[in-house]
Length: 307
Image (spheres, rainbow, N blue to C red):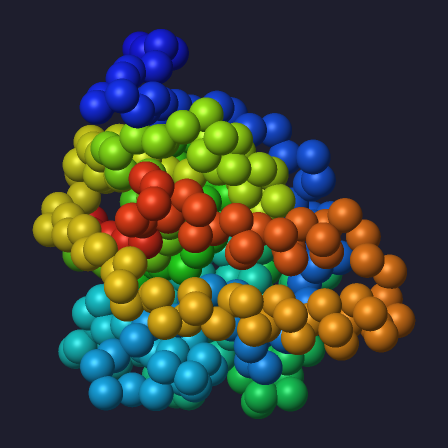
């Protein structure tokens, strides 16, 4: 049971982590249908995630960092020796990572899942334009409860999509991922997690809840319960890599991208600025206020193997 009373450390009020079960005011389908086109301001390829910075790379080239994150996920799937790998994207958005994998793995069978009909339609169109219409399948499905066959995939990944699953340990999603992977198959999850640290104030906890509301998240995964869930399901070789400093250079692009978006799409844009679109503007601004080193949120890549 999580205590609700505040602790006082060196005179400062410290709020414990909790699972507030934030009720998003906008549904996931509505949010991504209305705000989905706006991700073009972040990535011309519609990469709907943060980037990975490698030493020596150009920190001003956001698209390259976004593509590098795709490459990191692929590397962690450890597909060496598998001639025709079967891969599953658990929350594929508009399919940018799938298309990235297609360019690198011409003989792979790739499947992406999303609950959002708008994303299915537009992802398929983008796949056709890129020439991957037959290699990449995008399906409308709930990634916590699919009808896909047992042991059907060599690898599965959730790139900044596990946050939309239920529970602090994302148990339903991880259970389904375990069912879908073949023995020896690899799982990669890259996302924001809450650590064992604490919110520094009631205000910071409110910012966190507002962030969750904006991005249609009930609650972020808590790192320790998430790892324990993987262990209970029978995953092995579980590794947790903190990538906070790796994603920081792409996070630093948020103020410029936001300003440009406000000028081009809000001040002079023709589309109505709905609540979902405003939420998509506000959330990245709130993010640094609850992320390390100011808050308990950090970015991790977690990998595991199904026994």
